[in-house]
Image 1: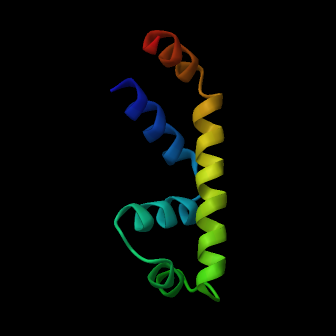
Image 2 (image 1 turned 180 degrees about the horizontal axis):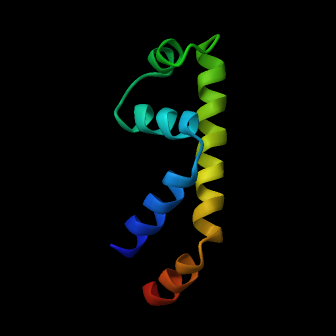
Length: 75
């Protein structure tokens, strides 16, 4: 539960576009569908945007003070 809270908090800090693309991807939309829904020029841009959004999310999780505590409890 602690990890879910950390990730949820990080997601809420992302820009709305980043939140949307990650949610669409998690819901099983293809990159082509994501590109159309978000008015991206193509599927390649959708892939890149999803990658950058995921990297930003991972960085926010790692920077969360509670994440370090979570890592200590996991061991």
